[in-house]
Length: 232
Image 1 (cartoon, rainbow, N blue to C red):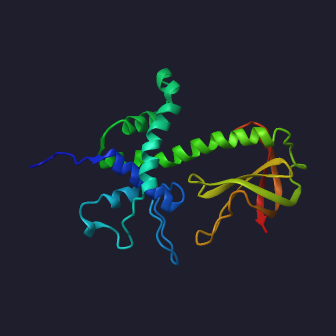
Image 2 (tube, helix red, strand yellow):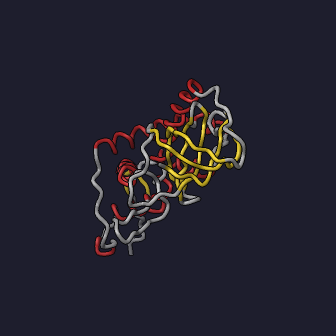
Image 3 (cartoon, rainbow, N blue to C red):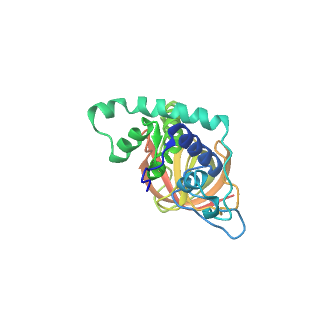
């Protein structure tokens, strides 16, 4: 009886991880099925199905992913970037258990299926980490004079410029970070999964309530948090 655990080349798994992220448009922990649109497989499930030996056990709505050159290039670049960005934390032994596990995987030539869930998050860490550095530079350049808007509980209406939108798995909704008249603003909002999301760098009208006065999580500049937001 052969009890040998099957292993897969790291570069193949990472490339597929970036393909899943590209196809999903983000990282999703759970597979989601809809009545009127295609199933959105979780990023981990995308890897499991992509490398499944027996397709008879795959869900009938699963389609093999096409791995593009950009996925391979991002896979290679992510290993170098994540190792470099965490050098000091590695030396100081201050990494979280998850990051220790991830970096161990990224420096291993072959992975088992049990490690798919760990590396499936790599694209999110890579892209968001790089973007955070760019956003921080832009915010410090353009929003150093940001002020809190109005008073808590009051109604706000105006033009909102979207800087960043991302899905927060914990709350099953999106967080939108942007600005109004040079002042930093953010809010959570759920969107119909069958419709297109607002595009970053676009400006649109919103109406909302002032929930609280806080600070931007990157720069610590004053930021106004809204709720009950209506777009358009």
